[in-house]
Image (cartoon, rainbow, N blue to C red; front, side):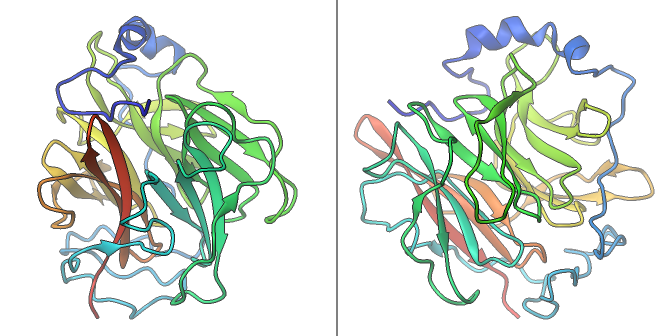
Length: 323
């Protein structure tokens, strides 16, 4: 059985565990009401001024992608990511993450041949504008008999972070194409959904319980250096937030809110995130959740939950900004 997706105002099947954990959240995670959040880290070579309040800010050039799109323009309608998630195939693909050069895709899929429910796969291509080859199971000891999804990796691709049935795990390897060792749990005993580690590898964003004794899932940031967890400043009034993804310099963030896919930018002078606005992307009438955004913000990958009978089926789409 696939896990029930997070929805605004409704606890998940794990809510009985979540309620017990919420009361201990502030102490165990080093979080306090006075903590205002860790400022986003700026990846080396990125544009630190990407929060100037313009519709989409200047284009970071750290991926050699300047001019690939006009970020003052909205995304065009999303199209199926057919090479990795064929729209007519019965398998479910809830997430995808691409390497910095966009030549390697880390895919979560429930296709036949896996070890359990949703497993992690990898696919490659020779050029950024070509389709990906056939996904193969991620080498190493990562996949098991339960759900593995939402894989993310910092730019060196030596450390894998992923979600396993509502918990956060990390696995490492010695080369970018080698096998991963046995994973270890992070923030043990706490619910973590849709984790997304920034390109710098210094911070992560994910869905977590608000520490007020309730069952509200919202957006948090984890600072690896300080081992500190905090709700994102400026977004503390959210009634629901899930599936956060950030561009390379961490000044622009997309997430799933109660009103669809939303976008917020970091206000540098005030050290806070802006009021979220609709990103104008997604498939009408269905649940849409971002899973990856390119370093330059020109392509947004997202999953679409399509009800099929009594279960759920996730398919991947990609939306592009025009030039």
